[in-house]
Length: 153
Image (tube, rainbow, N blue to C red; front, side, top):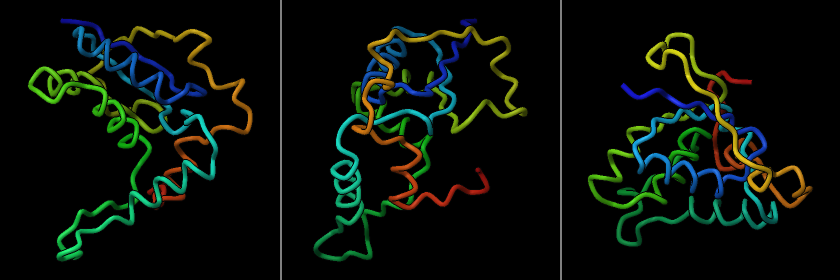
């Protein structure tokens, strides 16, 4: 049985984080990502928010009541979908996505399936500390596009 590896996403650039996680998952590693809401998306805050608001407003021209429905999305689902976009669209990609678990803050107490997780970190080029104001956190973006926090602070 392979050991789970735990990664804290606090202050990491989302695209770089997800590309590394996708590669590792394809190699068969099992990965748990915690603090997904603190990952950073690099770029102009206004343009990023505008792009996702426009994406959310797209409807079917023939009958908008039939979808697509894009409701307020949670940060863990947002990060998971970003990783899914970097995986191949076949059985190998589905299996790799099954080896990735993402949590908004920490691992819940009732999830004891991981046992002792091995912590790992990413290098300085994955850190968002030098981006300054040219980034937006996943939490802020999700709040703007409709996440109501569901009891989280």
